[in-house]
Length: 312
Image: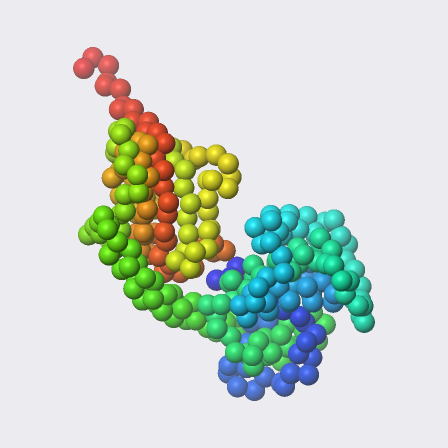
């Protein structure tokens, strides 16, 4: 939960809400404590005001549904490099005020913009109102400025966790219902088979080779998507297939790939109960997400039976 919150709020400006009111209600105090807790996670980045502006713009564009100003597929690896290398490589920069942005963003600005876009994906499930964001940013601003906290953060930390947990759970339940209805459309397609587990199996191209057992090792090419079409993993993009034990992956794959033959291709629609469930996979798959996989079975390596004891 802390990872979701910290990543989402890294993009928020600590000076935009300097004039926010003092926290008075329990909700205000929880949001303030959330900001104070989050500030501990990004002090080391020492972002200048100009850099924070780029991160915030990326988040704002993504949350408002605007067309993004950059190619996220190209920029995401640079964000990962930045997060790993920025702290030791840059000792920090003083805030730059009244600096006019250049007509063409620099590579560093694009990276920070992408960071904001990526962070916004984790913020969505919290469904914070503008007032809640303002109070949260006040907690961040006070903490980073070294001011005395307006609330007992230690006392409110459990409330922050409860708040985030409840928000994510509610969003997950809503997602489960919405995506369950969308999955029904896959189940209605010609040739689709829905099993007792909830797996929807659609044969795209029949194979002619062997079918694997759950204990076998398989070699596949695949692409995984969320129901909104977002690709969260792909061996095609990596440029090479992957090999693994079929009983070492999510149940949807263990069941679905056993229905395939070498040389074949299938679509697997995986409800959360046989995918990543209520927890999801932080940063990639939200809670209670239904997943759609394109799978090509390239090869099967049968499991080797254990040798018989000597003398038998």
